Amino acid sequence: MVEVRIHGRGGQGVVTAADLLAMAAFEDGHHAQAFPSFGSERMGAPVVSYCRISDAEIRSREPVLEPDLVVVQDPTLLPIMDVFSGLKSDGWALINSTKPLNELGLADLESRYQEGHVVAIPATDIAREHLGRPLPNAVLLGGASALTGIMSLESVLNAIGGRFGGKVGEMNQAAARAAYELVEKMKENNA
Image (cartoon, rainbow, N blue to C red):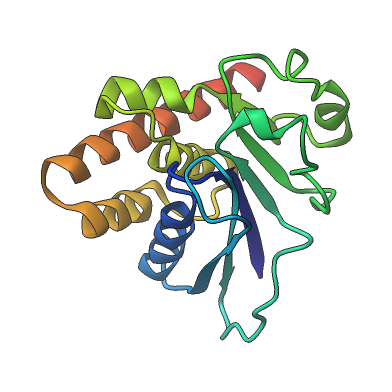
């Protein structure tokens, strides 16, 4: 079973990201579940959403405490909470930021994981470029697809298109594809 935890703030599409990830997993022929955890339910408040992906039926309904993948949609959460808590030793972390990991105070985290398993990408900038809005969720799913291989890019794009459709779906698909290509290029440069 692959477990994913997504951190962000209300209004950034954290819950939608987990739902899209589950839809992509279904596209790839897996079982999946997605569910959120809210604190104060208001715009800008910290939000956590979870997704589990498995080849067998999923019975667990608890929050994900030991994720294989952590996605951080808002880097302002880094100094106020331990978003990487429980991240498995062979896990991945994808952070939305224009800053390098050392400037984010994550050099120690990066050193504890395999090379290329902790990555920052400018997801908000990519979203603005393709959507005209700072919504990083679809962007980060494209990046996560390239980073981990947990789900195929095609399945991510199909999930996005199925959820949004029309021009909005196409713009989100383009943003996800751009992030996928960026992460693939980063992986090539590190090889």
